Length: 276
Ligand code: AMP
Ligand code: MN
Ligand code: MN
Ligand code: MN
Image (tube, rainbow, N blue to C red):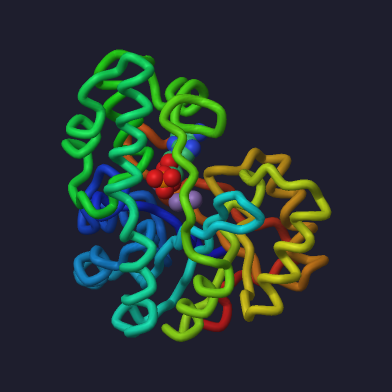
């Protein structure tokens, strides 16, 4: 099967490598079809496309949009998009809008928990300040020695019920799928195994997503356990959704799964890339 890696992040959002560095790494790891999917931002696409072309690596433009659904954050990946589509550009700008204010509130909470200087500390890790997010705070907390690794940080901070969690209203599901479709792309539910939904809620999410014109779901992702590959292969088949595969790589020292190294999609699925 084609080695497709259709989910990763550059330093334009919360990854640590530049788009061109990711292209080199993807090629070296044997990726044959690659997408850059930065959070809420397409500013790295031009560099990624150019670097991929120079390497003879097939590339499609992507994005990972933050959505609030049923009071929780859900991520929707858009693939094979026209990154210059006006509705997409405007929509993503509106989603990015509140991140710096949210960052100040995160830092205030951390300050009350006895951790000073978090706003400035997180900003130092954000190459694109407009995209300031929890990953940048987590890097600061590791650097400051508050916890030894990102895993411990995201256990004790920045998540619901812990210091540094600030509820935020992202895009609606309808907006995210609509922007992706208006840019000629395919909408895909990212890492479905990561959401704390009941089976009923999950089914409602999938039905709503499909009604809005969403077509795919990630099955093999760096955010799933091997058991979840099988579970979401069944979900994809039952729901009639195309299947996607992507490492969700954020950087060499942070990500468990490197670009292009996941197992192939289970048999019997329709890969999202088949009609590209
Ligand atoms: P934000 O969009 O600012 O809420 O940040 C979300 C990002 O935080 C995700 O895209 C991940 O990169 C990171 N993240 C969330 N939970 C974890 C976790 N448990 N371990 C590592 N990174 C995480
Ligand atoms: Mn991320
Ligand atoms: Mn995600
Ligand atoms: Mn991601």
